[in-house]
Length: 169
Image (cartoon, rainbow, N blue to C red; front, side):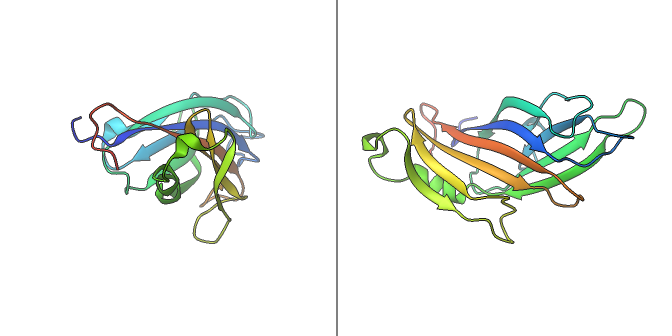
């Protein structure tokens, strides 16, 4: 743990128009993974019978290498068979970390917009993503269009927590 850069807090807000994997609905949950470490695989609770679930859960990843991509996968929980995949997205922290490195962030007024990222074919964003300075933190709201599935979006928010003695990024 001596080589940690910090803690990435991923608030999994909600899913929109997720794919139906049971007869009329799904029982979705989200898995977030960074790198190949099993201890870096976190998941939300299952929301039963809902293709528009609200999780509002914060998952915390211990970041060793901030250049590694993060993979978010939605699954349908099943009791008597393997859980069904409901789409995924992979994203990096490049823009978020660039905003974190801006000089004198603490001098910005609360709510200052630091950066906008437009949706493109390469980033899976469903809508514009804004990185803001709020309550002495850099926050990024992201709405992703899921890949490898007929429909579905997931909304998350990123924030960073520095650790005393961490190597930083």
